[in-house]
Image (cartoon, rainbow, N blue to C red):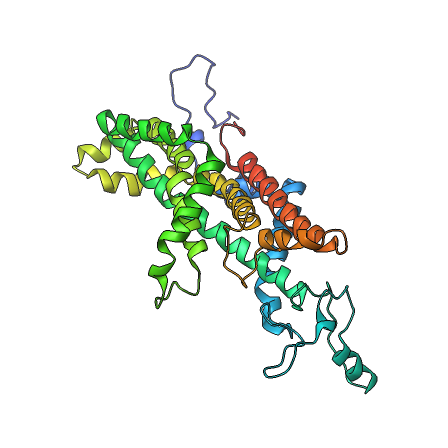
Length: 357
């Protein structure tokens, strides 16, 4: 009995019909299990989760951020509350400079009477204010300033860098020369000078406005970041746009009559998003460090609002008697900056296609 299957020689020009038979359900299920669908973002997240250092750093950032947001809502003391001060009565000096878990005279009397008094975990400062809530609130201020300052840098850097990279020519030349001039300026000196000048310039103009509560120092700090710190982001985005604007999908969009703004928004910036996320994650610790540095010099947040830098600066007056007041905000600043830098490095390793190619 002859075999019904067609036997083809290796060099036969005939088509084997059996190669075009539809796959069975079992074969399809096998192929799906062997080749699961994935995306660039999903692959990056998998690589990020495998990086234990970056994952632990992310958990530390989340815990610190949630603590800074949630704790002030139920903590019995306010950051500006001076304990032992009653209107019309002399201030009780026993609340000043309390060590951790110590109590003032009035609180000790209440404890002896059988009442429960919430402890001062980190003691109090020279003004009789609970130091723990001031550290927590200072962490909130430093994180908020770092986030919004990085957002300002991101918006300006993406706008300027995308315009320079896509248009090119004389526009690119002028923008890059401005970037070179800003790069040549001494960073810390310009930050200090601009912060001092802007604080005096805009201080009186904020009275009676919604920005008065934020304070002139914070507004001037945001302006300093908007003037000086966008250049790195702009140069990075410009380099990405220069490499992407000659791609086929950009040329096809031009051929259909798409405008430059639409091409930048719909095609170029989305393809730079991984670089933008990584750069922003690395920019936040720089902004926090700059804010803490300026607050340490007295150019940061307005009193009595605390930040980690201002708390460290105030602690210098009693550093020999109360060294923990300097150590605590310094440790928190170091922990935040270190965690953000390690997490930013993990993002770069996970999402940079050049490192994973």
